[in-house]
Image 1 (cartoon, rainbow, N blue to C red):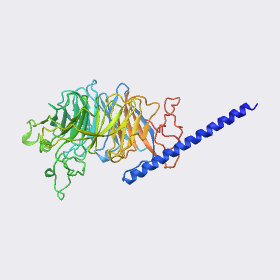
Image 2 (cartoon, rainbow, N blue to C red):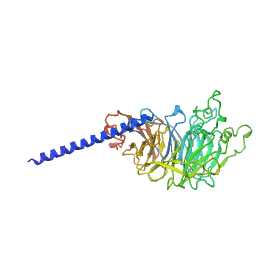
Image 3 (spheres, rainbow, N blue to C red):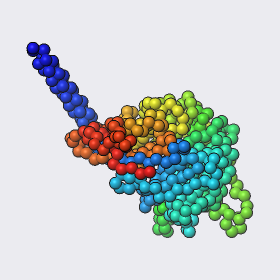
Amino acid sequence: QFAPAIATQREARVRRSGRRASAMYSRRKLKHWRRRKNELEKMGMRYNEGRYKLSCVVRQDTAHHVYCCALNTVHPAHADKLATTAGPRAYVYRLTPDGGVKLTQCYVDEDDEEDYFACCWCSSAARETSGRPMLAVAGGYKGVVRVIDCVARAVHVNLRGHGGGVNDVKAHPLRPHLLLTASKDESCRLWNLDSAVCVAVFAGEFGHRNEVLSVDFKPGVDPYDASEREEPGGGSSGGRNGVGHDVGQGPEDGDVVFVSGAMDNQIKVWSTRGYPGLVRKSDGWGKGGLAGNAFPTAHVQTPTFSSHKVHGNYVDCVRWYGDLVLSKSVENAITLFQPRLGGAGSSVTSSGFRKVQDFPLRKCDIWFMRFALAPDATHMCCGNTAGEVFVWRMGGAGVAHTAASATLAHKRCVRAVRQTVMTADGRTVIAACDEGTVWRWDLVDVGVGGAGSGVGEKRATPGEDGETDGNVDEGVDGGDVAGAAT
């Protein structure tokens, strides 16, 4: 007769021990993030206290994968604009303050077989179109880059010249009228969208030997040297790009410096050193007496850095992190390394590098899955094939933690995350997935000592109507849907 009572007491002891273990784990986790917060505050960096929660899901055409998403970092007045590409369509959304995503524009290519692989926001330097938000979309089959004026809602210019599909397109961070493209024809090209000319082609004897998958401009390097800018008392130096960027004079100013990754397992750093005044010459080309003349496009065949030892497989994403480079392959890791660039000679190529550290991933073993850095380089995020998104808080030299500080997951998000993007403050994460879905995660503020101050995300349980149940346990991070847009 005492057996049931003994069993009940045993279960009660197990429950109490489980609660004590959970409380001890929460205290250790809280202590860790308090220490991390103090480290970042000493470095003068921002620390976001809270947890990421799913705010919205956008469902596009399920027949097309969403290969790219991009936030407008060129125009401060349009910082809430999000662009995505899927199949022959380019979508423009507005991120609402309540966590929603509202469709504002949609552009469809005249060829239904076209497939846009990449997009980026850019701007014109011409007076009549200065300050207008423009969207550059790259065709994966035709190899044509279309620059769309989102104010006039028409194509501003078509950039033709690649002999294959375009895998990536980037706008210069200081001069957004300069575009850089990576193509299947094993070349990278620098374009001026105002004059619609190809400024330089980066390919040849020491170039890539397979498809170029990713490119990225080096931040802080101005392609216009000091002699091409006005004096401090004579006007603003940001007049060329129409957005008023404050650009400084660096040791590499006057050159275009970028990094590229390709399917030949190589990472290369290119520069227009040795071609003075090339970008300025392209600005006024096609006007006046130069109309009808072919632009003298530069052909750069020798990079300043080239190595195939960083990764042993396709390099599908590269990004600058100051003077260091972040790169990713299909090896379940993002690698941070410092390349040793060649000298000033045109025939000097260096292959030496110093590996700094790896950021481990899981279930990220297919190519064309790209990570993203926040505009201020304080956060990094990357998705995987299981629909999860990993977020890292990037510190100074030797301070960045290799383990992800947050893992964003949802039971309904099970497709590969092709690309992610973050807002400037790191509080909003956008994930573009296969089968036409776009997911928005927002950081919800909580107190340092409040309940649920962890950093992970809990998989929520879907309700009977197929949507996520809003009554998710608030003591565990994330999971509930605050709104939906289709």
